Length: 183
Image 1 (cartoon, rainbow, N blue to C red):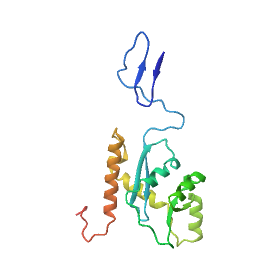
Image 2 (image 1 turned 120 degrees about the vertical axis):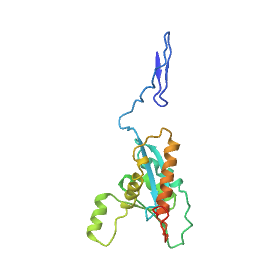
Image 3 (image 1 turned 90 degrees about the vertical axis):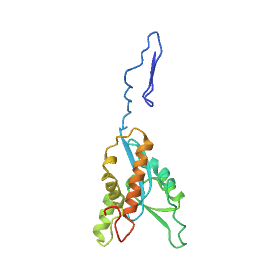
Image 4 (image 1 turned 180 degrees about the horizontal axis):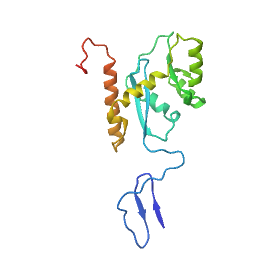
């Protein structure tokens, strides 16, 4: 009788004749699972990353919202009584559990789909779209060629490179008279 674990890519065989495989077994993916990794971001209004979480590509965004909100690197001071913290998210974050997590972190949720936001933009052209800020930040991350295709085996190496890219993106948003990075 043979047992094979797909999580650690190791194999155990019990019986009279046992031989270790020359290469590890490819993990067997369940239906709906994907290879690769996904970057979950929380950004401010200018697109500066506030928190980054890296998970497997098969993980849904809603399941990681609490981890993203808990991983904020720089805590914002408590706003005055009149002002509140707003969180703009796409339609993937609809649902009672996600909204409860957002409200538990003292945010006011603005969850809209692409079509709903496009209708509001047509109705009032002076308002600007909110969701594009995160998409632009993902585009800035993809400009770092080391992050576009993941070659690192360890999650901590890939997460460290993402944090380095986030620091460079945040530094580029600081208004300086002389640009240090570009000379």
